[in-house]
Image 1 (tube, rainbow, N blue to C red):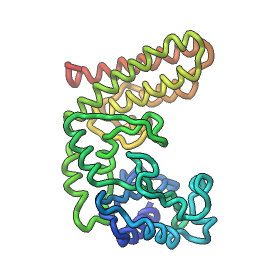
Image 2 (image 1 turned 90 degrees about the horizontal axis):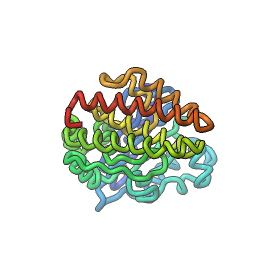
Image 3 (image 1 turned 90 degrees about the vertical axis):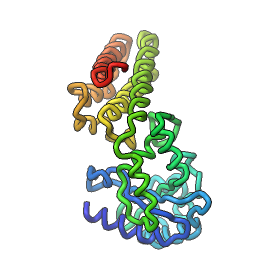
Length: 300
């Protein structure tokens, strides 16, 4: 992991030289100490909206940091989607939507490095909304369940600032620790309801043998239960990737939750009998999760 952290530190120092870059942080699994040898290096690039990063300077830096010629400079998926020249991959602000609002997929010193833009004004606003118990979940490529606004809080909580000359991240970190109680209540309420709704609506499709619809409902129910369990345990969740495995470390969780979810999603079945059986097993997990939440706060 030290090699990845060294690459991140060197890239962050150079990003800090780009006009408009207010702070650079290490995010993702590496920032949580859960990285693997092949983990991507996620670098959050924070900026004030009235002074966004200089795009030409970012593109010039990408060309410099990426080893070899243009064919080697871009991460494979980015190359396929955007072409082989780094300029095509270092996006303008807003290119990937309002939540993941642009960045780059690069290969630096033989490591996959993702640059992700973050608007500091929006992050501050979202933190205030979440602390007030206002939860949203929007469609966003790369997040099959959806982009929960509280992901911004998870990123701030988990990140390791690598370049932050004006101390922009310190006050934000103070706002997200401890876990906001109104956010906890809102996430549990919303996603226990969504899990139940997804399973209720899956029965008719299950009786028809509709594998696609039932599989989607099972996934949404499982993802919703994961959200509720993380909130119950006052843990932030920044991505669906690895989330079920991470429930193994939660103090309050239905017994065998991860194994049971993976079994249901790995083989939901074909035909009415098998599909309805998978729905029933997920409903048992939903009941157990709801019971844990009610033990914690009877009003749930």
